[in-house]
Amino acid sequence: MSALTQFNVSQTFNVPAHPGLEVPGYSDPTHPNIPPLKSSYVFRHRLLGDVLAFLHHSAGDGLFLCGPTGSGKSTLISQIAARLNWPVQSVTCHGRLEFQSLIGQFVLVNGSTEFVHGPLAVAARDGHILILNELDMMDPAELAGLNDIIEGQPLVIAENGGEVIHPHPQFRLIATGNSLGSGDNTGLYQGVLRQNLAFMDRFRIIHVDYPDPEAEKEMLQAAVPSLPEEIVSRMLSVAGEVRRLFMGSDSEAGQLTVTMSTRTLVRWATLAATFKGAPNVFEYSLNQALTARAEAEQREAIHRIAADVFGDYWQSSNC
Image (cartoon, rainbow, N blue to C red; front, side, top):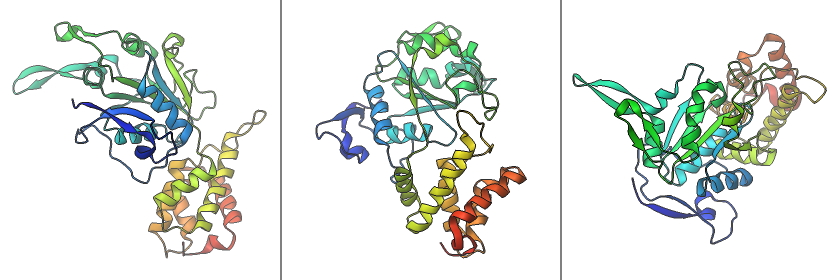
């Protein structure tokens, strides 16, 4: 593992910060588990500060990022890690994932069995970030095996002759999910399970919502710089209305079962630029980006919203 070094926050993340503010990372930018860097990525200051504080000193906690689909939870962590040269072990959880799979297993190598360490063991041993995506889809009984190592206790691998891995000081465990560990009350996230309270008590919680319009505008312009500002503004208005109908209110359930996530919004903008010159380019690209998977009535409603917002631009082939 490469040596630790300090990174200037303002220069590294292109955000306003105290000139002397630094965070730790690794000096070697060539490790294969460092996520690819997206130079156009735009950081949200509050979220960046919260994650950097955790990476600087976890104090025996894990970090749990919760929020709606496509709000950028996993991307936030990977883009921070990319700039700090911090290797990442990433796992997408599901109902059949076992704790043992995170530790490792015996495999056949050149005719003999050999123990291969899993992502948890590697991250704990080498000081990587372990990202458990969709944590709330995993069996809570299996996740209980993480309790001790989150708090800094050694990982004992009985299957490998009682091997003991003492967590590296830079080991961090970060999880993402669409719920707060209390199950899904909306019916929109199938497979989400209620998690053990004692397990969830070991996490700091950060809510990651969709970016505000100005931040999202900056993201779109960075991702698709050829898109006119007027079109970007109209796309943002459509996204805001779709999300409002998806989320509903305190007294009324949402009217849509699909939503315009930031991920979907960027996809729509990218496809609009890709199919520039095609008839009804904005409707065509919106269908591919989102509405093709919506029920017919909802697809029609979303297209009606977009047509009203876009006005004369809706039938255009230019963007």
